[in-house]
Image (tube, rainbow, N blue to C red; front, side, top):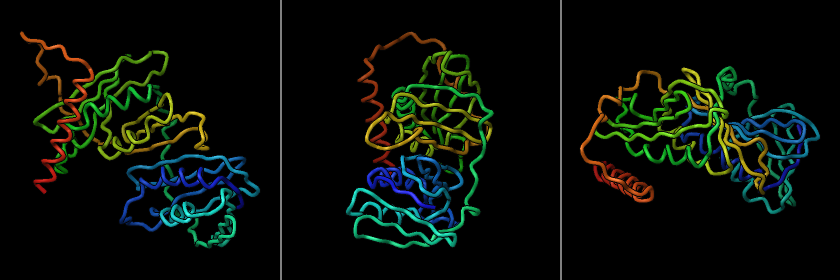
Length: 292
C-alpha cells in the first residue's frame, strides 16, 4: 500500500473523523482509522459502534491497500509535518512508514479484518434538503432534548417525514420544541419517522455548512447522511458520510400537547425567535453546569 497526498488535506480529513472516536474505547480497533487507498483517492473511516464517519481525499495511489492506524497519533503526526507532500507506505505486516520532507515516522497498525463493517442502508429511500435549512431545524429544537439517560426515547431529535413535509421535534417532558419544513417532492420520496440520538444530531450539525445539500435515508435501526462539500481547498471527494444508530422505540404523541386553537397570536420576526431559542439554550446549559 503506497500513496502520496497533500498534508493539509490529510490533516483536515483526519480532524473530521477524529471526533467520532471516544476517549475510552472498549475495543482497541475503535481507536483506529480505517484507511483505504484505491485509484486516485484514499478514504478515512472511524466508528464507535453507535456512530461512524467516512470521507475521501485526493491522493496519488501507486499501490492500493487497506490498513488501520491509531487516529489520534496519526493526526498529531500529520499536523506537525514540515513539507506539504506526505508519502505513506504500508508493509504486509501492518508496519507503516510516513515521510514528509526530512521527517519520517513509523507506526504499527492493525489488520482491517477487525474493523467493524458499516451497515447497508442502500435500500432505504433518499431525501435531499438544503444544509442550512436542516441545520436551522435541528438547532431550533435541540435545546429541548432530554439529558436524562433513563428517558432514552427523549434523548434525541425526532424526525417525521410525511408527504412533502419534514417535522423535527425535541422534548424533555417539560418543554417541547417543534419546527417544520416543506420539502421539494422531486428531491426524494422518503417517508417515515426516526429518533436521531443527541450526539449524532450534534455531530451532524457540525458537518453541515460545508456545501449546498445533504442527502439522508434511514431504516428502523440506522440512518445515513451524505453531506455534500463544495469544490474548495479541502481536497474532499464525494462529501462526508455520517452513519448513526437510531433510538428504537415510540416517540410520545406531541400533537396532544399542542393547542389546536388559541385566542391570542403573536407575530415575531425569525431573527427574534432564533435569538430567544439561543438564549434559552444558553440558560439551560448554565443551569446544568451549576447543578452538576
